[in-house]
Length: 120
Image: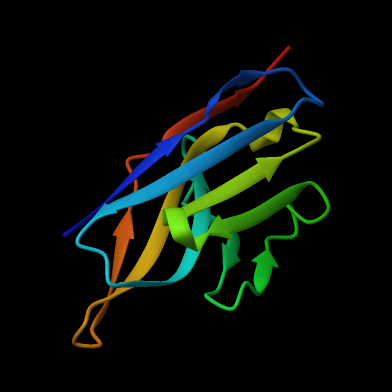
């Protein structure tokens, strides 16, 4: 079993920055891709950014140029640096990781979510 613990959310003014972290713990064999998603009230969860085990990154159009995803494999942690935040970035942010067991079976895990509120 793998658990994900997110941190770093909070209240920030428009134009400000936040750095989210998500650390995996438990019986970890290999973590493949990692990602950040978000869900605002009344909307569907959307992919914000992803990073592969080869550190290839991909971003939603709304995140390009403002957000940066990175990972520290030694710490089993994924980060999301968010700059130039806008009120429309307000949402609950979730991390996800695709874990591969020693038997080669891949399974997705999700964090519990962390609230990000951008408001003056």
